[in-house]
Length: 292
Length: 289
Image 1 (cartoon, rainbow over the protein chains, first blue to last red):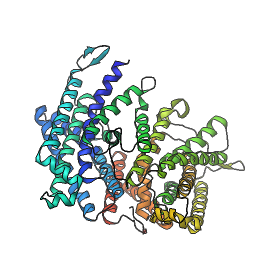
Image 2 (spheres, helix red, strand yellow):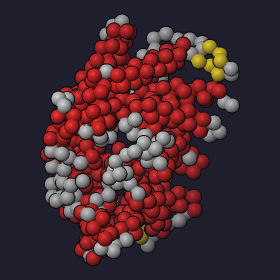
Image 3 (cartoon, each protein chain N blue to C red):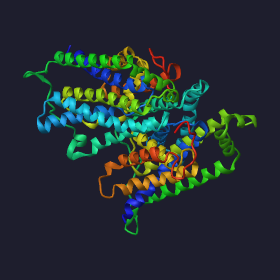
């Protein structure tokens, strides 16, 4: 068993799970594919770079600042682009294309400001990792695992037990009925964008501790998040997390005998297999029949 | 002058791509986000045939288009089972897979290093090296595409396509085999996109996977939407404007490190504005449902 690949898969999976969780929280309330989620992830990494490397702010403070700004970015995207479409009752496809537009616009804005080259948040040399079985794990990777698992558990609890979490579920079930019992759907949608985007930002910051950052990083990341969501059953919160880990592990074990460049290919083949054969995900979550 | 001809040739190639995508997206209402995959297949097929076996680009063009048709069947297949944004996602996935194969199958495609030295077209021993002659060739193909497309959408076949777009269940109820029509539409679209791909390859004489990214597919889709969904003249205008207009940035004296992202930003902003203000495009009547 290639333990190293399995371990890499779990670490990649934890990042995918974070992205997928944020995506699922947003998807549940608005019911369209918010691909601009990926650019929030990129923004998180670049904000952390700006505060930490360029402005020399303490890492913890700069990470929190970046996460808050990411949440605000999510809200801004919803207010400026999705809200006018919602008023017009646009179709899902129009939302999808508009979110592509936002994505392309912001990605190239980042490229214009920071340049296309790769940047890094690392300041010192890479520390030697610990050995588990025949695999090596670095302290940073342990941090990534711990923080992301902690975030996953907190968010799960949040959606399940708090008032706002319940309001989100109510809006996702039936917007009209929710507003009848006094839940403001627009406010709930905004808070789901804030929380989901904060998660995407956190994922972007975590990955930037481990690898280099570049303006195009968010594209494949959000697609992995979407694929993870679909694997776990779209809109399902535990499903998104499990889907993330499943995809991370499948992708990394998949390149056991072939080159690493085929990772994207593997995950998209998984996507198409799921879309065609099991659109409800592994657990067969019920989906709106009209859409699938 | 050379530069001007070059822009026109590129615009012509994009017009073919936009028209062929308009048949799938605008006339039949199927959201396809992987159109660059077809031109990728067409370009690589005819380039590899020319480079490895010395096959004339004319045959390469046809074979490339034929192989693209096979991919059209593969990409069209999900359209029989999926709808709306999920179909968009699946076709998008195919686009990524084709790009990824072109990039990673190094022994065949040389991966990111690309294929240099692709021969140009020649007629009776005269190479089509001068730009005006190539522009003539591209124009012929553009007119051919417009002719075929007009015949297709004006025929009873085209009426069925529009009925699928407006109400698929109703056209099924009238006894139309919508699955067959959808597959044929994808095959037709792929055929012309394959031709556009090999026209591009034999013009630039160098291809690498970065010319066929999914962003490229979205740019083509933007051209379709901008000009007008389900409108031939719209596609011609949309492709021309969106190819020529960003070139003005270069005249403003922008260095290419700024010009490239600025162009993409304009595209992104335009897509958002179109979706909010005019999702059917300039001349179109149909909008995505």
